[in-house]
Image (cartoon, rainbow, N blue to C red):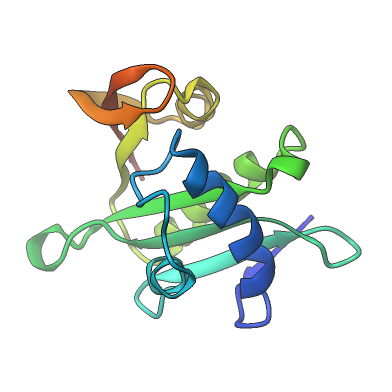
Length: 162
C-alpha cells in the first residue's frame, strides 16, 4: 500500500466511495445528499491541511484521509483528521495505515495533539482502531447523531497527545 498526496486525478475514485459512505448516514455528519462540489470542497484540502490517498500496487484508490488544524488561532496547535476507506477494501489495514500516516504528519508539522470531534459511538470498528492507536474518548455528546438504524446516538470527542 502506498500513501501519497491526493491530486485532482484521484478525486473521481474518492468521490465514488465517499458519496456511498455519506449517503449511508452511519458514520459522518455530512448531509446524506451531499453534492460532489461540496464534498470536494470539504475533502480536498489546501495547506495547512493535507489530503492523501492510499493505493495498491495497481494504483487503485483504497481509501483517503484529510488532515488539518482542528481550530484556528490559539487552537491551531491541535490537529484533526478524517478517514474514509472504500467498503470494497475494508479489513485490509487501510484505515490503520491512514491514521498512522496522519499521526506522523501531525507530529512532523509540530502539532501537540490530534482530536476527532465527531466519532459516532456506534462506529465500533473506528472507535476500537483509534483506541488501539492511543486515542481516548474525552467526552461524548449524547444523542448528537441521528443514526438511520439506531436512532439518536452519541458523538465521541477523541484525543491523543503527540
